[in-house]
Length: 231
Ligand SMILES: *[C@@H]1O[C@H](CO)[C@@H](O)[C@H](O)[C@H]1NC(C)=O
Ligand SMILES: *[C@@H]1O[C@H](CO)[C@@H](O)[C@H](O)[C@H]1NC(C)=O
Ligand SMILES: *[C@@H]1O[C@H](CO)[C@@H](O)[C@H](O)[C@H]1NC(C)=O
Image (cartoon, rainbow, N blue to C red; front, top):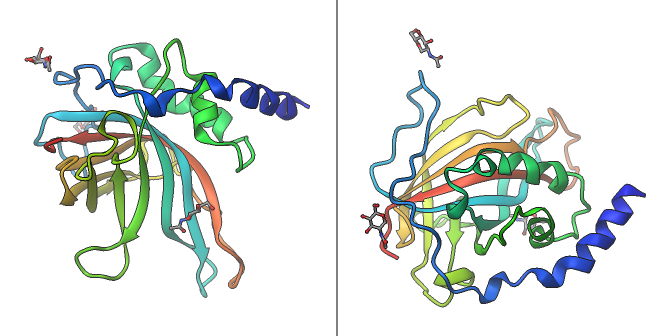
């Protein structure tokens, strides 16, 4: 019953979500600093100024190998601008607040509904999408892409994307239930030179699977910080 009421509420308020028409650039984050865990060398401090800070609501996809373990086959997420929350207490906990509700909702409820209903005192603009494409360098395998070409203030700018390559990864400091923190460097696009995935919640597959079983999707939230770029 709780879930049913929640869904009714989500759809009742979904018209409030006016983000696609929002063409304003975000708050000035030139002084925002990404704090990485101490005593580790897997992730290094970014070499460029911050360009975008987003919270992601999405899914990690996995298929079952012949060995009976899950292997990652990409992800899909919607990215919401949290630049204007930097320096507030909401910034630190937003991935937890969204994960609590996002992880419990049926797969057909869009991320935008969650953000509208549970998005604090300001509307968070949907600034981009994150998904995977065929590796543009080798022509095989998958590469992560952050695509801002059809969302927010960068909508219509066909260079507003970045395809990344993994430069480092660190088990989530919050525990094995959360996907790794990552550092990626640009291989294509003008949106950013470096991307960090931090403050991850969820997204991990079960420990084992039955070979031949279908693809699974596992809900997650995280922050993505984008540095540098020329957009
Ligand atoms: C953003 O803030 C920095 C540091 O305070 C300042 O130097 C810069 O001019 C600001 N940028 C814009 C576009 O206002
Ligand atoms: C980092 O390592 C130093 C030296 O071993 C130790 O004193 C310190 O408590 C560690 N800090 C963290 C945050 O683990
Ligand atoms: C991942 O799963 C989502 C949801 O089912 C789907 O839309 C997307 O195409 C999948 N992506 C990949 C790379 O499998």
